[in-house]
Length: 253
Figure 1 (tube, rainbow, N blue to C red):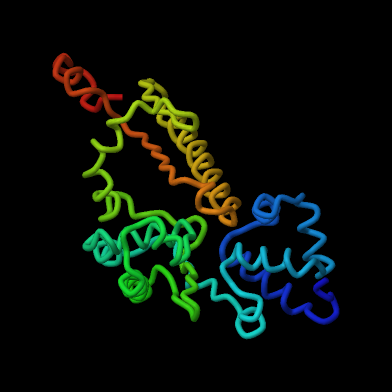
Figure 2: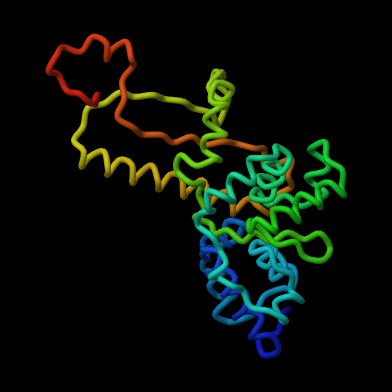
């Protein structure tokens, strides 16, 4: 057992790492396959098995030994990158690939096993991402993200434009397999109702992000890559707009 009297500061430091990454007891419970009440007891009693403590450390990307030497730096966790940072990432397809792999909490060996990358090349790209500010590379090829759980790409920024340019590839798909779905629903609602609906979609996005964190300890083979596209805008097909009468609403609902 991790003795509560011998290592109280380790639990305090681990708790700070959880706070810095925006993770909750519920996230830890999902990741470890235990109840939220058990996680609360672990932190309140400052006592659990070494294996369980190590799993909690893995969730926040920190080693046990490192907890004793340093505290997290919440101010460095980013919710957004700058336009210049995103431009630097999209300038190199392999750099973007490694960035996405890191954001998906893949280690170097997993990246090499799944993509045509050489180890020296992969490490060079990771160091470039460290220069950009997306992550930190620690001894032993360990990767620690410097972005928060609520991290998002810039609206209409370089990353989103990169993805939008490949929209045909994304939508040229039946969306019929288990876990897949695509629905386009044309509605006419008040602006206030639309804002409320968007808030609910944002909650769905957070739930996917929470599940991503909860499943981060699973082997890569058990968590294939998924992509969630949530989009809301005032729009109707151009063929419909061409049929609008003069004086009708200038903006389609």
